[in-house]
Length: 230
Image (tube, rainbow, N blue to C red):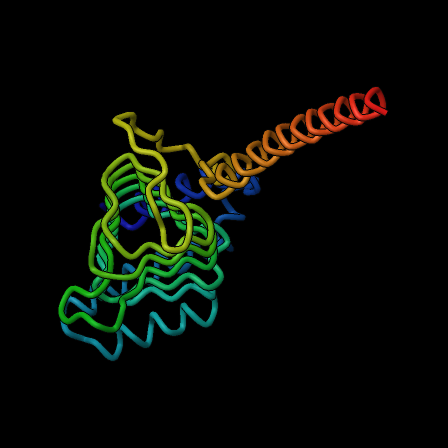
């Protein structure tokens, strides 16, 4: 693919997924657009073992955009980083096509592994704001990682993960549409548990009130019997 075709494709990716962008010229100022172009150059240099120059380019991009992508990472087509500040992508990370990352996302290692140390994200994965994916496992295609989640183990395709540590709360065989950018309407098992406890608490209070009322009636009957005896 020529550089002009590539730039047009990247512009289209940004405009499709960020409704705040109003023109193609505005995309040129977008951190995601700028950092991906620099990553592509740095990655080519990295593959040719020009490590210092590759890191120099990536570090300059990180200072300018707040997005740190190691030049050794392998990234497919259509990566979109929304806002981007605080995003970190480690050296052995592998990212498929049409992946979306939000601000504060870390694709990192645990410090306990050698070789492949960072995660693999398959096609159409969405990682919401502040989520951390740590380790050399795979996030299956079409999966969603909820905001603030910490994922430490493999996620099958077509799943939704939330929480700390991350746990699968939805799994099915329906593909998540590429343009589904909804970070809000995700299952919340903690909230579900709280609601269940609240309902149980209301039920128990009702039982207690009925029991107290019954005991009072029994006491009243006993007092009536005692008055008759007198």
